Image (cartoon, rainbow, N blue to C red):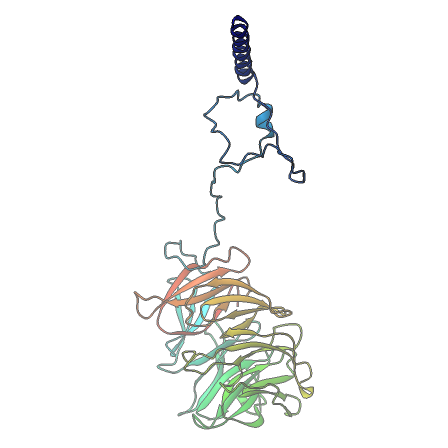
Length: 432
């Protein structure tokens, strides 16, 4: 009995001592955490790697922050508390903001106001009337390639309409055509600025023919300026008219597109195919480089496009019209205007977005979006800026102009306001 008591007392002492040692170990050093490698296939029991829910709170046991323990250094790294990353500031939508500081218009903006006057505007308040032809008196204003002369259609004798030229400052005006016909449309300059082509019909609604004349010698029309009919084209659904880049052909559209050789008046075509929604529209060659014809192949009915021709941008190699035109690459649709910047870049619009397209591969770069264009945007003469106009809802009849620096931020900046119906805009920077 005494021996048994002694044994129990000894066991008790051993247990007490063992407990003290455990406590000392806990206070002096944390046990090493055993982490099982993920590629160990052994089925023997091991200590599982702790999961995030199993780890103690940082507040459960204070640690010395200066020297991490071995256990802490072997713990798997947990993701920090989620902090949303700062999102990249999205590019502005390029929607004009009325609070922006207005940009002063540099150079001179020419346009037809209310189909009656040719206006030259140098700033918000510097508005000069170059010519006033009265209601519905003037149309189709266009400038020679060097900007030294402008051509337009205005009243001739009686009910006739004729082609005129004038200096931009209004000091000179001269009638070029002398047909005496009532329907005259779209005077178009040759690349060298020496000739003007146009279409005309005896009365409004009758078939149109293609004419050409030199502007020099116009005071002795028709012999002095060699006015002549290129061909009895009998155009019934006219779309557009333009010179080729080399100036050897006049292209026009009567549903499909045709080419007239200026040397002998021979006709090539039809050179394009139609989708049945209207004539080829916005025929245009680059101001320099290859004879690449760009045009809009209309693919929407007028009722679907609010009366504005809309379609695919098509590029054709027009080097040898007699051999036909070869389509150069894929098409862009849906657009409603195009303007060549140079031999490679084309400014195109689709009604509420403005792009620059590459002629070589038709890749596009957006310039402005969510705009409400009342006409095609207009390039400055240096091709570095463009201007477009939107209606001002709170000011009926007022148009707000926005300028975009094509080589800068490409953000629309409000500029001038014009009251009235404006068409056929041209923008010259510097002397013209």
